[in-house]
Length: 524
Length: 67
Ligand code: HEM
Image 1: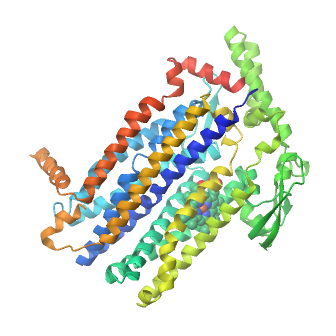
Image 2 (image 1 turned 60 degrees about the vertical axis):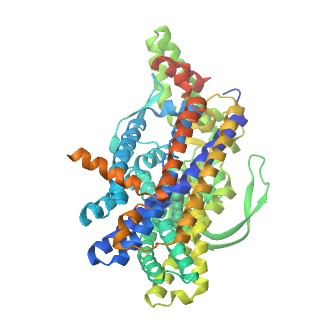
Image 3 (image 1 turned 90 degrees about the vertical axis):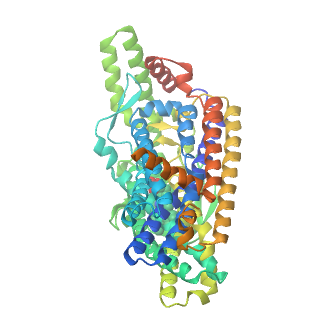
């Protein structure tokens, strides 16, 4: 990598971040609302109470709006893989392409049949079959998030595959190791359960609006109860899987972990900074060290969170960059030298193969395989090593806001549930306003989760193996800039459509559900 | 006939839609923009547009990775 066009890398990253974040505005509500609707319909089928049917149909319509506007926005990310990140796409092999395609086809059939039954099938199929369809839509839409999250987890912790130096592609060695790696499990569960929390906040917030407007009391209270119970239970999963994700991170991505904690100097019995404000002061030429202006810390908690041992040693950014022989941590300089050996031996191997010199090829292959786990560091040989440190303030604050909001939502679920059960919710205006304003906060928490995961792993596309500078396609930066702005416009238009159609429908309310116009209103 | 039934299920379903109609318009416009404009004119598969054989693609990527 003699010449790196940083504007190309930066624009390609910005484009991917923009599309991923916009796409993510639509996904979590689909994941969570599908289950909330299924629970509501179960209550309808169990009790036969028409009010539950009305509630189910209203939230189903909201689900439909969000689904219709969000569907297929994720395909853009796949376009970008092939166009903007072609080295990565080739390098990662066929492992993810085929399952993603199968998942896509399955999702299509599931959606075209069971979603159709969900919307068109009232009074046409039996109540039980309709309910089954609603549950299948919920499971199906959640399952269709599986493989893309497994792929993302593999990029953070590349296990179960082997790089083939002849083709420059990865090949699957152990499917189960890829699917069931702890990183993949935690990522999938944390992502879907955070979607459940977001959807619960959404349902409670919209219901709070009805109460503030003194409309639809029974509808709003029942919706709040279902969403608050669902939200409370799934919040526990969010905390458990988030904690699991942090532990995985400490093990497999120690730099991300240190950056997220603003830990520059490693220590035993490391405390966790629960709340902190960073101070920026340049202490080293290589990178900036941020101290705290203010902080509240919990003793030993970081060591415990990372390794389930309050005495454990947690490496800091400086240990990782400069190395720490006492704790067997190689410096980035050493890693980059080894990585460079891996890169040059791959080139030697390829040349030797071309000229038919097998003994030279074998020797190069041995050297390559010995150093492959540092492959990506090779691109930083002779460069500023601070390029290997992600943005500390971005990850530090994003993590704290996400976790803080997670606890805020839990408290909100608890308070609204108690107040609704005591039939006092409608009078507590400030709780209702808090619930309403928590809707954007849930989206912020969710987006910040991705910021922690993705900004924190920079510069790696595949951890330790492939950095962004090597993964990007050699395109003209201006062409990437043009598509960036096109996406910006398209997504903004979709977002405006989503907000407009949704608010219109919410203002309209659940409406009547008299038997005579039942099938018509079902299709709303 | 089962097919007739399925057809009429979808047909009456679509016909009696209200909000759904606008949503279908949005879905169709979106799919058109994605596939007929973006995919066709802006998002060529980088390697496929340069090379035809798998071998050429892997040589190119190795060259990129090791240069
Ligand atoms: C309350 C405690 C929480 C903890 C301990 C926690 C922890 C974490 C950690 C460590 C990551 C990074 C994982 C990685 O880099 O691989 C993460 C990511 C994420 N978080 Fe949280 N989180 C919490 C709450 C929330 C809430 C309330 C939401 C949203 C409503 C949320 C949404 C996300 C999302 C979408 C991601 C990205 C996907 C992933 O990497 O799993 N989190 N979280």
